[in-house]
Amino acid sequence: MFTQILAVFAVSAGVCLSQAVPVAQKKLNAAEASAQSYKLIKDYKFPGFNVAQFILPELSHFSYILHSDGKALLVDPGRDLYAYKKFVRKNRLSVIGVYLTHSHADFVAGHTQAVAEFNCPVYINNASKVSFPHQPVYNDSEINVGKAVLKIVTTPGHTPDGTCGYVYGTPQQKTPACIFTGDTLFVGGVGRPDLFGSKVPASRLAEMLYFSLHNKLMQAGDNAVIFPTHGAGSLCGSKLDNKPFSTIGEQKKTNKYLKINKINSFIAKVLRDLPKAPQYFSHNAALNKKGPKVVDWTNLPNKHILPFESLATMKYYVIDVRSHEKFAAGHIPGSIPIPASKKMATWVGQIVPVKFRMVLVVDNAEQANEAAMRLTRIGYKPQYIFYREWVKAGRKINTTRFVNVDQAVKELEGERPPLILDVRTRKEFDAGHIPHSIHIPLSKLADRAVYLDPLKPAISVCRSGYRGGIAMGLLARYGFKKIAALKGGFAAWKSAGNPVDGKPQQTQDIVNKQQSGNP
Image 1 (cartoon, one colour):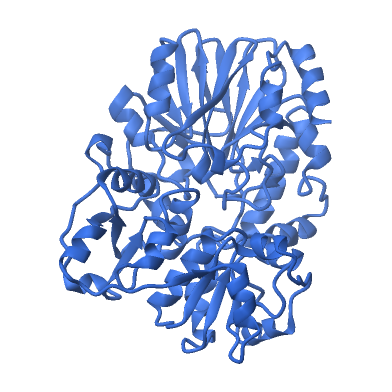
Image 2: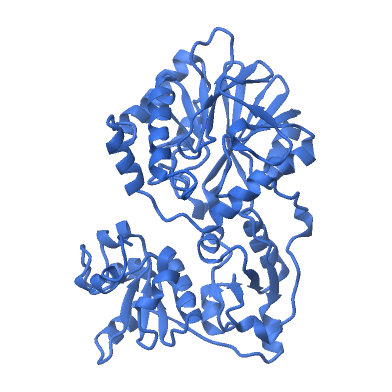
């Protein structure tokens, strides 16, 4: 259906999407792409203009360059500009500005970085009340980019200052050819309205979002292509699809949120489906409003420190970015293993308070640079230490262990069986889990570890072992003495033919009775 709709649209509007459709159909897998830099997905052709779409898989972040007649506008760019600069040089473009659809919270935006690089203005909603120099825009404001015109449409809901950019390529167009929907409308989802705490109640923002969707975006024309700022895996929305674009018409048919016509039902649905927001979101939002400091990317990582003994205390958050296997064999006491791969930035952002002093444990300078780059994108300024220096200084070393499936089965059949702690999401847990597991999502483990006995043996389990390894280190930091992680995770357990339950176990109540809400 999606392919058919885009094919019809391409014929009717003259948009060159013949090569874009396979990209849209492909599942954009973060694990298969480098998280070290933004990647160009495609430069889509429309009558009168082009839209170049970029992705940073680690943060599920889409950003764009709208360009026409040698002029270019950056849309929701990330903090490191390498991919954008390369594209601008290759296509001999002149950057005339940066358009921010709203004040972002999940990443440090690249607006001040772009101003320093391109000497251009930043366009953002006047309601954003930002501190950095900018060009305020309002509902119906227009930004000219060559032949193209980007019209600002205010769409509060995800945030009070949310906007969308309607793009027209010719004066004859009555409806937009495409829309930069920011965090208002995603492919398969909508923006979460709960990031402002008590300042603006989530239910009020959800009501605003309903009207922004029904009275504005859904009236923009079914053929309008939507380009969101996030895809599957982002915590700015719930249950997003991983297609890089869609159309208004397709979303009307497939997006469950757009099918809800009663406002109270919409509010309830939006608030019910929300994953936990990482604590770093509020820090990033404030940083983006103030205007992030310009980063010298050639001078990363940050300060190299020596192996002082107090590093192994709760005063610091020590993040070991080496492999889980190396961490298990020996690590600084109190450190947490979050390897510099996959979703490192997201998990650090959920676990480590921004105000704490963070130190990275690395094997070499390249590893330190990669980890620092990932974390700088979300507002952290980590220091680092080489693990070999800690060992050479004769400091205390702790060990933990990964157990394979056979070992886990043997221990579970023993006289003192360990607790099985499943740290996956509720949806994953309900779909299948090891019998008699206790379920605490990794994002909530730091708060709920107090419900578990630190003297009792436990094995942490996730899908494949990555989150389980993080949980193992996190619990060890909080004083658990006999914690292990299941190598290969639940996938390995299931593949070995071991018993699986498909519904939450009654042992779950050990945790649920001591807290409000569901994990």
